[in-house]
Length: 250
Image (cartoon, rainbow, N blue to C red; front, side, top):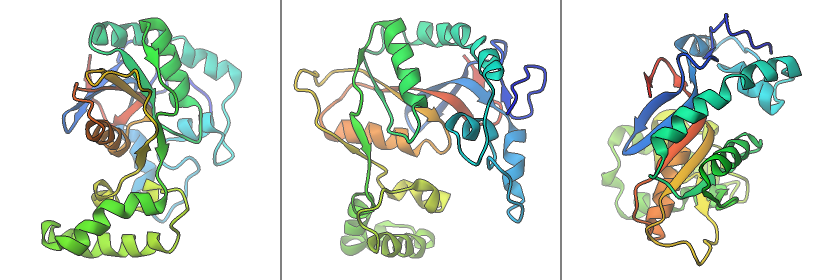
């Protein structure tokens, strides 16, 4: 995977054009790099298997699908990061005091969280969240199906029941959102909150960090887990990569 600032079919890699800003539910989300509509084209032809799915760069950064990225391209990508982060940090100044990365099989979210924590002098709380098992992911919606199934739109109920039944057969496996149809992912719980440090005040203002913004389900789940634990202050979010499509610049 080669990064060329002049060829941006998948991503805007320069300071000009970044960062992106989005909002999902009530969560404001800043993204270091904007993904473009072109990066979703490969996913439109479901009969064609394309390495890297609809975003080969993140697959290369994670070492997946036999994709790699040379050091020279990493260096080119890094040329823009300080300037973009400076804009994000200026927007968030005085609004956050604790930073927590989302769990991932790669270190991308941790790297970004550490960088922001260092620059902004924030408290860094690693491993605050863990990926849910299938049993944990379906616990809430299984109760709803049993006690109040009419609260689920009729068009979703059958799909949700099928997913719940499938996941029940593998209760201890890690829940994977990709295995669930996009339209019903919000019914499932992808994260669990681990032990919270006792000295974290209830009015702590969290900055949640993830590698990629897709549906926003992981960040929304993290926000809900914090609210359930009694943290009342609003949350901010930062990701490396935005949703596909031009988004409002900061």
